[in-house]
Amino acid sequence: MSDNWRTHAKYYSQFFKVHAIDQRNHGKSFHSHHNSYEIMSKDLKYYFEYHKIKKSIILGHSMGGKTSMYFSCMYPKLVDSLIVVDIAPKNYDISHKYTNVFKGLNYLNSIKISSRKDAFEILFKYLDEKHMVNFLLKNLYRNDRNQLKLRCNIDTLSKKIEELGVYDENRVYLGKSIFIAGEKSDYIKKNDHNIIKMKFPESSIVYMSGLGHWPHSEAPKQFREVVNKFLRL
Image 1 (cartoon, rainbow, N blue to C red):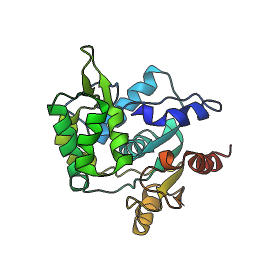
Image 2 (cartoon, helix red, strand yellow):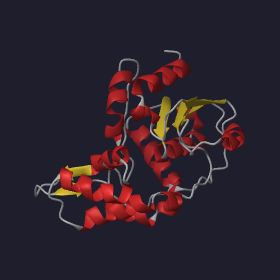
Image 3 (cartoon, rainbow, N blue to C red):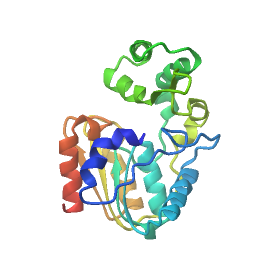
Image 4 (cartoon, one colour):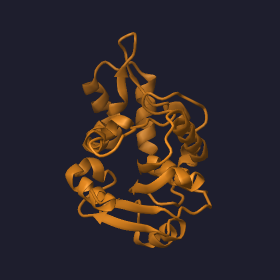
């Protein structure tokens, strides 16, 4: 969700006009039965047209990173530079990786949630990882009937999970780009460097020491230092 980037968005607003975007089926954006990267890139294109954005620096993490890569390849004239966080332009078996995540969220979605504390205890049984549970529970909100519900469209995301693991964009982005990886994460491995360089030939790859899949939230200050160096701020 865009809320995950609130601190960074506020910081970078002193240098740029910042748009923090919820993709379809996430946050406060609309729900849909469709959720491919090509479609989400077109959503972003419509957003650019509506807000009359002609040039941009695109930053995205994980699923947002894949959308950012697709968008940059599909509409390169709109992208001055690209920042991708802990994801590579390749296929991932995320249905296997996130089996327990979806089991837990689907269960939460099927019951009446009494409190955030109860939701944490339920989801922790599936994941046993506090950081991940707290991250996922940012999706909780109170609806107009004062009930705790998930903002994300867990039904569609569960059904489209295989599509979210795919990267099938064959075009190349020739603009300046950086791939920021967590050293402890397995999302960008050393043998992924060749495909990154093939799809994004003007890219650099930076590993952040001691960090996992969420370097921007695990070490926000150090993350900004890497981004600032790339942007020459």
